[in-house]
Image 1 (tube, helix red, strand yellow):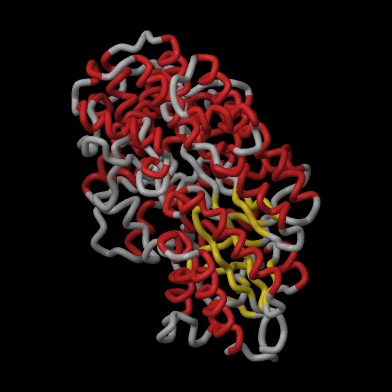
Image 2 (cartoon, rainbow, N blue to C red; image 1 turned 90 degrees about the vertical axis):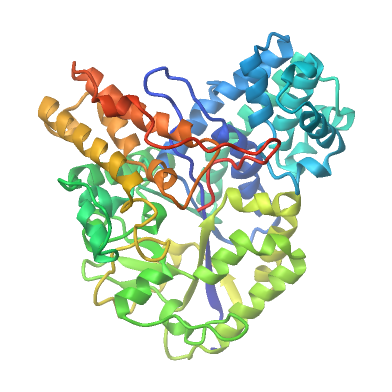
Amino acid sequence: MNGQLAVAIVWHMHQPYYRHPQTSEVVLPWVRLHAAKDYLHMARLLHEFPNVKVNFTLVPALHDQLEEVARGEDDADARLTLRSGDGGLSVDDRLHLLRRFFSISHQRVVHRIPDYARLHNLRMAAGDRPDLLSSSYFRDLAAWFNLAWIDPELLTIDDRLVRLRDRGRNFSRDDLQYILSRHRNMASGVVRLYHRLQKAGQIEVVTVPAYHPILPLIIDSDVARHSDPNAVLPQPPFRWPEDAAAHVDDAVRQYEQVFDHKPTGLWPAEGAVSPEAADIIAKRGIRWFATDEGILANSIGAQIWRDDVGALTDPALLYRPYRLANGMSVIFRDRELSDRIGFAYGHMNPADAVGEMIARLARARDRLSDGGGPYLASIILDGENAWEGYSNNGNEFLRALYGALNADQRFVTVRVSEFLEQNPAQVELPRLHSGSWIDANYRVWIGEEGHLRAWNLLGRTRAFAAEQWGALGEMPANVARALMVAQGSDWFWWYSSRNSSPEDLVFDELFRANLEVVWWWGGTEPPAELRQPLTAPQVAPVGGAMLPGRTE
C-alpha cells in the first residue's frame, strides 16, 4: 500500500452505576477517582497533538455520575476522608481505610512515593490492629490515597496540591477538603472538554447503551447457546427486547441533549453483538458500531493470522469496515494491538513499546493492496484501568504513541464517523456472529451456576414488574431505572468464576438492592433469595492492592 493507513483509536470510558437505590449512597469512589486520574487527563493530553484524532466512548451512566460528583454529591469514601480529618473514626472506619486506601498500583505508585510507602509499611507492621495507628496516620493515609489518584501531571498544575505533595505528612481537615474539591472540579470539566474537542473536530464521542448491558442477552438469553452449547441458562429465558431498545433510546436521547446532535456511532457494551442487537441499533439511526476481531473471524469463517513478529499476514480481512444487510457499518478491533496496550506495553520502555506497535502496523500496511479498501486499523480498549500498569499514569507512552502517529506519514489518525462518511464500507458481511470481545462468546456473563442465580432473579423481577405496571415506559421512573441498572454487564462479570475482587460483596449487594426496590415499589415482599449474597466474599491479602472497577 502506497497511501496512508487510517488508524482509529477508541478509548472506552465506563463505570457501573454505584448509587445504592435504597439508601441513595454512592458506595464506591471510582467515578470520582478516575475523573481525577484518567477522564480529564486523557483528553487534556490531546492539546499537545492538535493533528491527532481520537475517539472516546462515554457511557450514559458514567456521564450521570460525573455530573453528580461535579455537583458535590460525595461518595462514602469522600465522606470518610473528611471524617478522618475530624479524628472521629470508629474501628470499622479505620479497618475500611486500611483496606481501601491503598487501592492503587503498589509497584507504580505506592512504593514510588516515600511518604505513601511509609504509611504502607506501618500498616503492614500493625497487621489487624488499627488501634496501634494514630489519628494523624489516618489523616495522612486519606490524603495520600486521594492525592495518588490525581494524574501526576495534573497534580503539578495546582500550587497548593504541589505544596501538599511535597510536605507529605501532617495533613489537616482543610487539606483533605481541598483535595476533594479538586476532584470535583476535574469531574466537572470532563464532559465540557469532550464537548469542546468534539466540536473542534479532534475527537469523536461514541455512545454506549445506557447502563452498559449485554444487549444480545437482554434481547434473548438463549443466544448464548450459539457460541456455547453447554451453557447453563435461565429458564424461562430472559427475553426483553424492549429493554434492550430502551438502553439504546436513553443513550441517544442523552447524547443529543449533551452534544446537540444524535450519535452516529455506538460501542455495544463488551463489544457484545448479535443480528437482533444490530437491528435495534440501526432502527435508532446509528450508522456504525464496533466489536472484536473474533466476531469477524466467526462471521466470515476465517482465521485472523499473524506472523512471527505479531503483524497481520492478511490485514485486508481485519483492516476494513464491513456493511451489514440493514445498512449499518461495522468495524473490528485489532485484538493483539489493543491488548498489548492494555496488558503488555506498560512493562516496556515507552519508546520501545511504541516502536514495536508502529512496526506491526507498518508491516501490515505494507501488505495491503492499493486497489482495495477503504482500510482502517481499529485499536479499541479500556481507557481507564490500563494506566495502572504504566509508570507516570501512561503519560510517556501516550505522548510517544501520539507523536509517532502524528509524525509518520504512513498513518493518519481518524474519527470513525468522519472516516466512514468519506470512505463508505464496500464489503458486505454475509452474517454477524453472536458473541462479545472476549472469546467471541458470552461466557463471562452467562452460562455458569453463579450466573444462573442472578439471571433467574433478574428474570423473575422483570416479569413481576411487567405484571404490576405493564410496559417499561409505564413504570415509575425509579423502577425502570433499577431494572436497567440491574441489567448492566458488571454485576454478571463479578459472578463469573473467572473474576474476583475485594468488592465482590459490594457489587452483589448493589445488584440485589436494585431488584429488591422493584418488589418494594410493587408493594410485595422481595423473594427470600434476594436477602442472601449470591457470591462468596473474596478476602484481600493484608496490604494487598485492591484494583478499582475492572480491566476489560
